[in-house]
Image 1 (cartoon, one colour):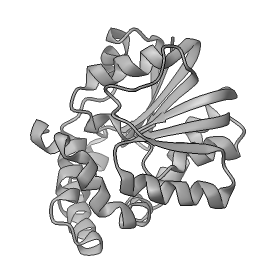
Image 2 (cartoon, one colour):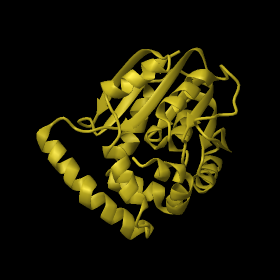
Image 3 (spheres, rainbow, N blue to C red):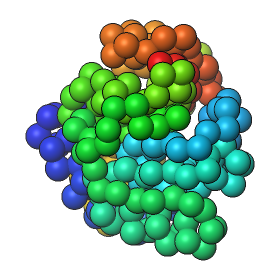
Image 4 (cartoon, rainbow, N blue to C red):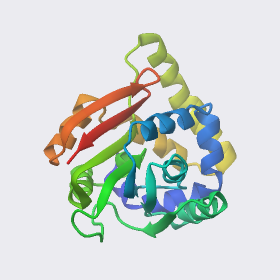
Length: 229
């Protein structure tokens, strides 16, 4: 992924914020909701949780609803995405605070959070390792990390359908609904050019995390990474 594109990631997501939730659910056929539920079920209850690249707050709100977080700090660069998320959290009466934060240089003190989460955001970091080091830094000793990110299916038939869908269907539908010619082409490339599975797990270990493991979701289209400090 071009570094220059990642420098402008906030404005990209600001442009598609109004359509983001609907398109996410449409383009994943609703399976993204199931992936998030699996991630939340894997967590222990925590008092303070940091959700990095929180977007419109789906994961943060779900953690509160399922009593996995007493309070969530939802950090993101996109003001447009967070405005939608804040409205959703208010309707849900979920204790979520949205803050505009660069994930690679967070303003939080060391060991501030009982758990750190991130759903489909780490591939947008300009510096992946710097972002993971920041997650490690703000996590308390014994705290949990949960990261969800897209992968690449290993089943030949599923991979063929995945390539067809990601190369043609997703960019076309994204452009039609969002009226943005660039955003969904970028999202397609950002997924297909990112590390996954054991390669991503190595980055977690390099950042200092222990007990690193991962689970494939839906043939490896998505991965759930689990780790601890």
